[in-house]
Length: 303
Image 1: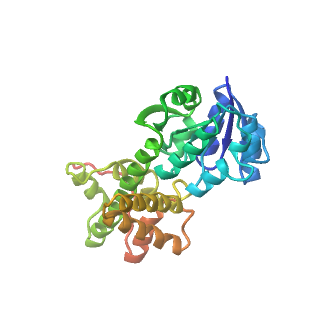
Image 2 (image 1 turned 120 degrees about the vertical axis):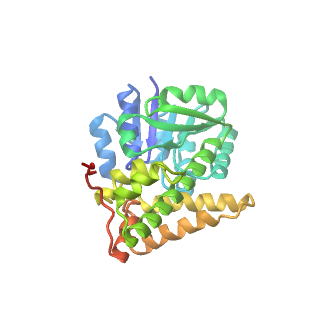
Image 3 (image 1 turned 90 degrees about the vertical axis):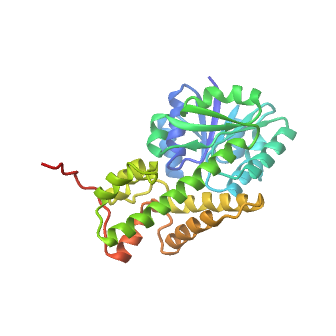
C-alpha cells in the first residue's frame, strides 16, 4: 500500500479520497474548507496545513481542483506539492484543465525528478462515491503503471489516451460536446413545450431519431425533469470547461461557434446568480421566461 496525498475535497474529490482510504492506502489531505478536511480525518485521513506538507508525506499526490491556475499554484507555487514531494514521486492530476497547462506543469515536475500522470474523470458524483468513474489517462507508460493501484480505487473504466496532457485533451473534448448538447436540449425542449408539445411525446419521438442523446436519456431525468438543481455539476464549472475548450479550439484554428454559444448561456446563468447551482438550472430559466415546465410524468399506456 502507498502513501497518498489528496488536494481538493469537493463534490467529486471527497468521495474519491474516501475510496483511496477504503483501498487500504494511507491518506494525507488538504483543502481550503476545514469542514471537508474534518470529514476525511474522521474517516482516517491525516490533515495537512499546505500542499507542501501533503507532498512531503506522500509517494503519490492527487489533485482535484477547479481551475488551471489552482492546479499550477497547488503543485508549483509557494508551499506547493513540488516543494515537499521526494524525487520519484508522482502527481496524479484529475481536474478538468487544458492540456497545455497539464503538459507545462508535468514538464517542470520531470525537471525536478518527479512525474505527472493526468487522469481527469468522467461520470457523476454518484460514480465518485461508488468508485466507478471513467478515467481518461495520459502520461509516460512507466509513471502510469506505478499510479494504477491508486487510480483503481477511483475508477473502473480506464482509457489510455496517449502521452502527457492527452487525458486532459480527451476530457476537454468530451465536456464541450456534452455541455453544448445539454444547452441545445434545453432550447429545443423549451421550444417544443411552448408550441404545446408534451415532454413525454418529445421523448417518445426522439428516442427513434438522431436527436436522442445521453443528456436527454440519462442526465436530465435525474435532475432537471424532477425539478432538482441542487449542486451536482455546478454551472460555474461547466462554464470553465467550455471556456477552456473554446480557447483551445481557437488556438488550433477552429472556429468555436457552438462552444461560444453554449458558454453564453452558462455565463448568463452565472450573472443571474446561479453559478453554484446544477446545470439543470438552465432549463428552469427558460421555463420561467416562457411559462412552461418540463417535468417527468408517468407514461400512460393506450387502452
